[in-house]
Amino acid sequence: MKVNSKKIELFKDLSQFDLDNVYYDFHNDFDCIKIVFEGTFILLLFRKIIEGYIISFKFDNVILVSFEFENFNKIKNLTIDNIYRGRFEKDRQLIEFSSDGKSYFYLEFVEGIRMELWCDYIVIEKTEV
Image 1 (cartoon, rainbow, N blue to C red):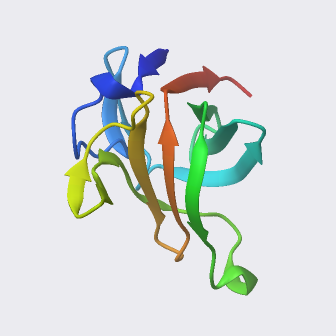
Image 2: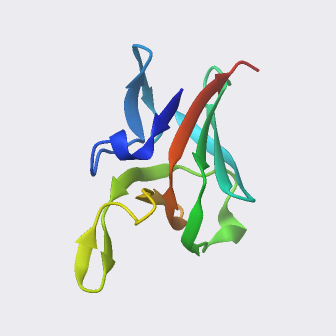
């Protein structure tokens, strides 16, 4: 499923949502097993703890604004806390979209990892293992 980032509801937490009539709880039922930043995309791979299938979140046409990673010596897998489209402060004003139509996203993990980024699309796919 490919979603234009502008069509995602402002402040809607994407760590829990319905996809194709199936409820996904990425905070409680999945581990984030891999994060890839390559070229113009960021890919998050989530493995379902019990069934083991993989869901990928691909943020496409990304501009990475910030990335904070701490406590990495204690981490085996990551637990997502929040993924949402928010606003960005520029020149003392809150804006939703960049001049070229990108949306601003916040990603936060329980283990202390945080990212902020601009992107055009999010592609979500399920892969059976």
